Length: 280
Image 1 (cartoon, rainbow, N blue to C red):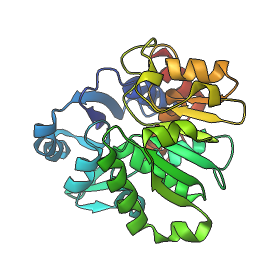
Image 2: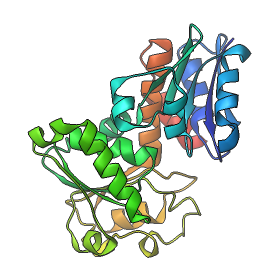
Image 3: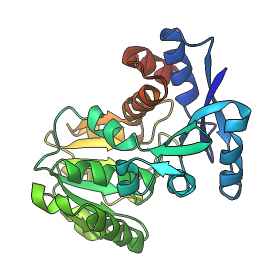
Image 4: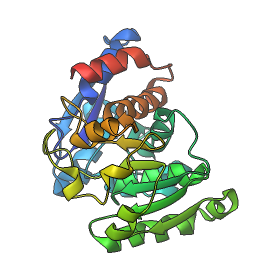
């Protein structure tokens, strides 16, 4: 049995096991491959990760809070993972750990149009935010980054600007912003990469995030990476104001499909994955 897993802390909420197991079954691989969730505390991550190949694992997804640690532990990494500074997809072969990042292509695949020339706001400064900024700026968007701890947004912008100098050549621009600046600005694309919304469907995002609901009109696309049994309040109110909403499940499906393609070499069954992710 070729074993796969998602590693996180917490990880009980993850829809990846149901989604990937359904995909493996649809591809006729359920008898040879399996996918599970593994809770791993930060202090145990490297030790646990290095033990996986000996237990029959051939790959793993990595979620909060391990994405940056996953890249640091890896023996080899793709150029996107290195530039982003975080990995969410690992492959084990030949005694080595190879890191990749499917968060970036997953986000772009979930959008219905190119971000080229658009003004975007990325909320957060963790591994998912780094992937979002890298993906959007790489496609020509002007990207502004807000984080509750302002120094982390500054650090993210400096790090990505340093490794991706080509951003300046495609018309994009990177900058950190304060909460007041973000609330006053008009964005065409907003990506929530924070944990705001994981507290439940009624958690107030506007008390924690610098987003003015009055600016969420039909020209705005809101991507909320948080997902659960029902839409987050940010997603609900954005839709009520006429904005286009891309929920976290669609992004999960898209990045999960990229991971599955890396591991198996087969074309992922997107419809099956969407249905399984929605059902939980």
